[in-house]
Length: 334
Figure 1: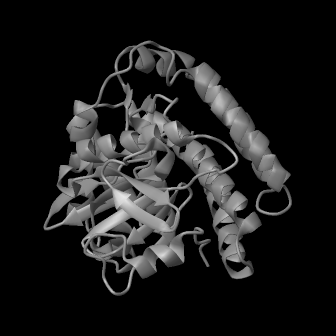
Figure 2 (figure 1 turned 30 degrees about the vertical axis):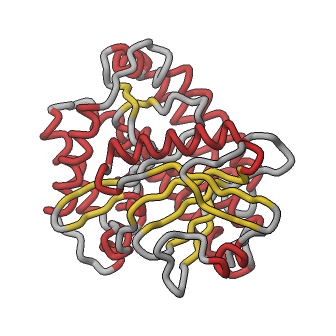
């Protein structure tokens, strides 16, 4: 069961959301309490009440709304405020007083759950045409994205730090979701790959292949409606640049397609993107980025299993094991 915020019952009872249906669907994510009220979905940014971080929360929400506008203007995202004044709770466009603001909200048009790629995959309705259109969307998104050519992002030094952190954090779950053997079979080849291809990574960092990418190009964020592809934005930490090699976005979706046993579609998606971009280095770098993504997913599920109820904890543990095993498969493609 999701952890509901303290204001949940009063918010529903008072009908604070515009055009609120009789039944409001509630979902909890890592960063948001999400209320699907009808035509609009309200993503209330979670707050750490022990810290005065409202300014950071506002920046976080504005960053997300701007990203969604860039990727999917038809969702018409807006940043709103949740205000509390004594017993009165309201959703407003502009709070009368800063002291009344309890949380910031990203509100946007609601999309049918059946339009998301993860739902389409579950029903086995995804085709080569589907992933071909997704490749075209991603290529166009990358083509219009801001290029980061400082050489400080996407280089071997940064990737080594990220890998070291993933390994360090994964070690906390030894014997539960990952074994020492799996760690050894992944870490050393990945470190060697970085050093062997240092010139390639650093060249791409300088030559414009490092851009402000999507950052979470996964089925639960990809929408296909009336043949049109668009995507929900990724929530970035405001102090981070959100920049990486474009191959990172490709790896996001390829890993999930492989995980769901849609291996042929993963290959077709990759080849479609390569054909559009004429970037022949993708094939060489993709296994490394796949391995990084698998480590990330394995760690995320391992962490979620700690606090999840027993049944969900088991599912998270099983997922973590599969992702870690998929890391080994990716490494074998080096």
